[in-house]
Length: 214
Image (tube, rainbow, N blue to C red; front, side):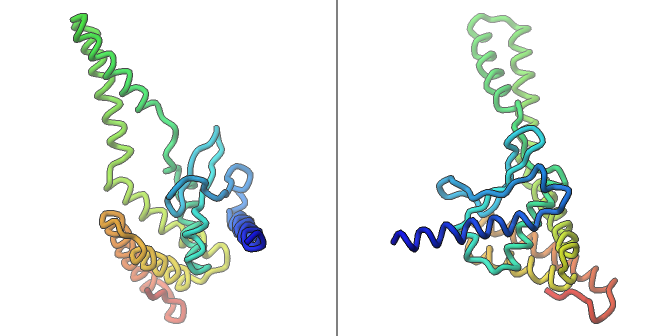
């Protein structure tokens, strides 16, 4: 049992080291790759852990169920999100919303109209900012843009354009099969559809022997 646990830990560390080599040189000094320690975490996500420091977190238990090429393209998708500056940052919105709501309740009690308006204004601004951060159409558009950039990063690391499209497309298909949540599965379907359209455009622009097919 101890031998199996040690072997599994070595395999996980080896995979994390491998993924670090897939970071573009310009990111290696401020982006780290670690295994997630949460209970039931997402497959892969990025988090701002300090000023000018990003950590890409991997659920290694789920990660090992994917083929190597699928892992690479999903990792480069996350790298693309870092490059596109679409990683959620620690913001003031939740704190401001709590302060605004607390202030509004307090001003209702003391009946100070001006302070009540200020508290409600703070609630409105912070609420709107939170809505923008979590807007489904916006996050989907950002994901599709990162998918496109992941293809470009893959070609920097030696993938042909057809193989890059195939690997990311097959990753989406696998994740759709493994995702019970209908909303999340629909997002993968939309990203796969956008990827197919992109592959068709790339196919038309490439010589026949290099055309990508999904």
